[in-house]
Length: 367
Ligand code: AMP
Image (cartoon, rainbow, N blue to C red; front, side, top):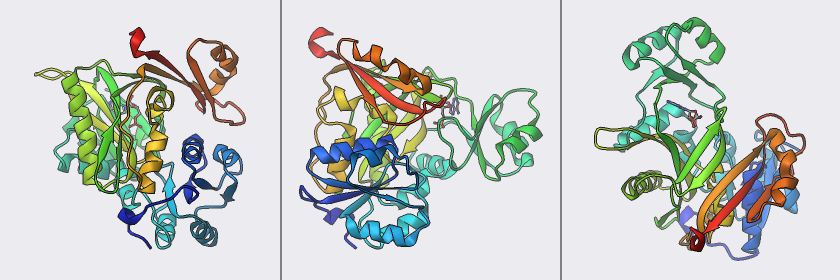
């Protein structure tokens, strides 16, 4: 096994990617542009990332033999989703460097551990409480107040595994419907806007943050990202410094995203961290067309032991997700001047399924 800070790949070396979704696909495409080979591991035979690599392993994450063969074939391993089973990551880490270190997942797979981690770093979050029974839910509501958001500690994404609790709600029913024994109750945040910071950190501790992105959600799913966020330079600097503090505290190698709420405060707008994603992130897709180095390339550079790029933004950028049937409008998007269309090659456009995205850049000279 090689220590993460000893990884130094050469063009032609091979990168293993766990997970075969659009993030894995775009990572593999960025790696390919830098001369690397990629091998994707995913249990889903219809993985969009399989389409862009020569070597793929279609096997379950519990298949130790398949994991070992995969590890033997590659020089470094990374992942495109945060719910990589710890046991699979340990099998791989015994053979090849896994970056970011899979121990990061212990913090980021669990909303309670994540909030405790932020709190220890002095970073503000919504008020929260650990809840493992309906009695504890009642006690937490007394402390935190309503409205509040009840979330499963693990495996929640795009609003799945969460419920907003308002006055008069039948708490027994809410608790049964969440169908978990470990949850977290968060105060409902009356945010002005939602922002995220995409940060990259190399093994030698160098951090590069992209300009702050402002995110608009619909049905809990990211719809539109705009860069730069409509916040003051001072608040943007604070947001980037929070992301940098988190990346350093995790001894992180690769790209991570930190989602934050902008809330009104006595001394002007303040920030609350909502979530840390230990991977490339949908709110960073704008960097593919809107910056000199994309988040995908930055991640590949970091895990390859290559210098990070200093990302220069090409102008004001809007990224629109094509969700479900939105993708049927791709031909119209193709005719929009200045728009760049990305389609993920997925099959049926089910509701809520991310099928592609479109980037529109207003060059600086036109602003
Ligand atoms: P999450 O799965 O935690 O990223 O939540 C998905 C979305 O739900 C967020 O982007 C917010 O729009 C909303 N949300 C999550 N937590 C809260 C909260 N405590 N208060 C208000 N809105 C929230």
